[in-house]
Length: 99
Image 1 (tube, rainbow, N blue to C red):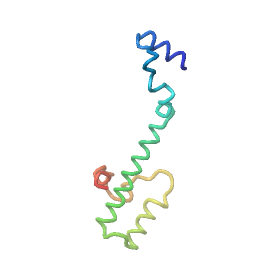
Image 2 (image 1 turned 45 degrees about the vertical axis):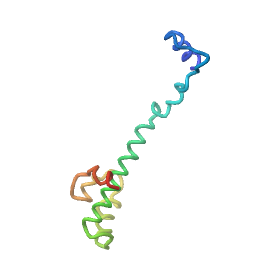
Image 3 (image 1 turned 90 degrees about the vertical axis):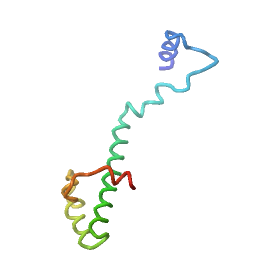
Image 4 (image 1 turned 30 degrees about the vertical axis):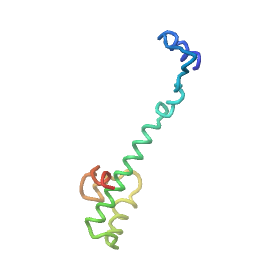
């Protein structure tokens, strides 16, 4: 990999020993290896979390009925369940921005 990178710099006319490259191709392996997908899944979970908190606020807070609804419509389902099954509306990013 280092030889390839050096040759690419030579071909471009910018292989300078006094100014070595700061980043190597391997520095970006987390992007090519699937990290980005995991990162956006993490961000989406923050959006769902903020929307859940917003739902509780709009519906009276931490009441027994709200907790039961949360458990029955979302937590106890397992696997894929639409967030709208819990909140009765589409997930919105706005709550995560306020959080």
